[in-house]
Image 1 (tube, rainbow, N blue to C red):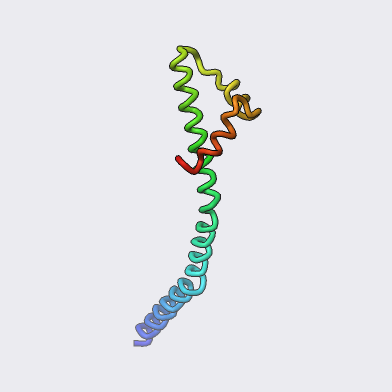
Image 2 (image 1 turned 90 degrees about the vertical axis):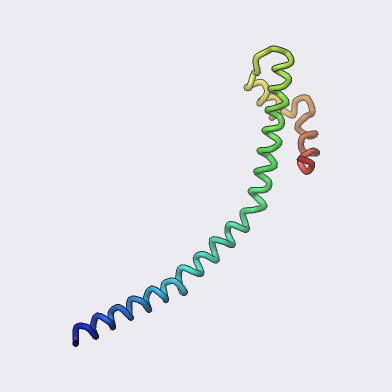
Length: 99
């Protein structure tokens, strides 16, 4: 009988400990990580817009290469984009909200 009561008391203590862990530690950590994820949304939106523009430029370049029947010089295309070549970089920014 004594061992049975002792086992029940230990089981109840472990249940209480699990409940306290969930309510005092795990729930606040979940709320904090949810808030951090929400805080990242503007950065993700900006990055997705940049990726969209980069993909659009790549497709445009590939179309031009296909029309000309030439090979794509990736290094020159990237170098030209970084230097603001052909004036398309600024135009791409203007179209960001429409795509």
